[in-house]
Length: 251
Ligand code: PEP
Image (cartoon, rainbow, N blue to C red; front, top):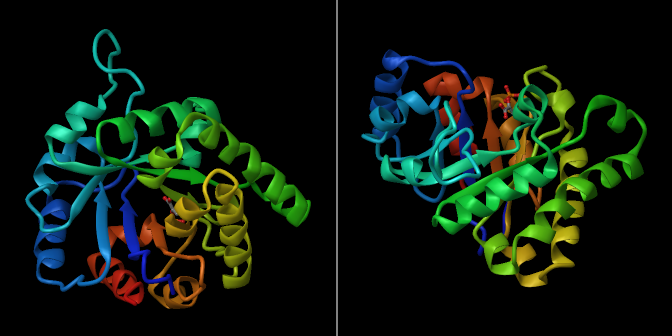
């Protein structure tokens, strides 16, 4: 598991799932659970953020606008997220890159906006299947490009307030998980890339793994030295599974 200066973090991404009943169930179940030693974040659809803020755990958004306010129908600003109690914002999830044409540059802009409001961006990176099949060099090249947009936009102190999530696209929602060794290799690579900006920031940076994490595989993934917790999709919709995964992240 993670070094002393990196507290594990487990974030649940409900995606476009959930309802008021699930919000109530999560508040009851998570409030009764002792997450001591792990930062737990639940990221529901934005419409449920206010209701979920009644829980004794952090809440996060699944996206944010890079703009401040005005004529941008359907968008939500970081100040609005902050006002309802959000502490984290997922940016650059592969589904947003795919569905909404988000690029590494627009993702970096959003991350900077989140940091400037004092919230923590969870910046997602990860390769598609064809890149994984092309081998380790191809994976590293792909992730290097995604990270370089971020490191050229954010200062070392802004990076210091950020979290990275490595989410191989071929593992998201597919039931295929990166092996602990594959995850560790990419996490170590990410930390190495970040250390070119600032070695101290890189060593303190939390790097989460996401992609079909379940109670059965969480412990082994989280026990890798550079894996500091997880970004959980499907399994974050079941209180028992999510709590079990959070427990697996305890140091
Ligand atoms: C995700 O939504 O970021 C994710 C990793 O999903 P799943 O855990 O279902 O693969």
